Length: 64
Image 1: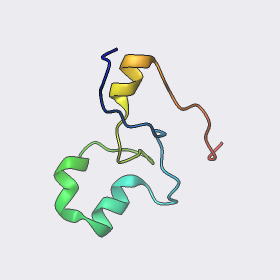
Image 2: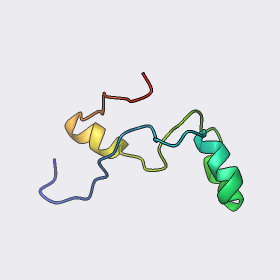
Image 3: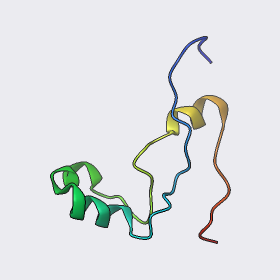
């Protein structure tokens, strides 16, 4: 792990009732090319870098 770096720490899913892609289509259709392949309630923030460096993964969900 580098002595200094920037990481996002967030869960993989959103709390919105609507699927992520539907929210992009409704509110930011200009970003649809970036959202291609987005499924379910995926977060718009990506914390893969943190997962790779320290092995962190959010486990709890309110969806069941």
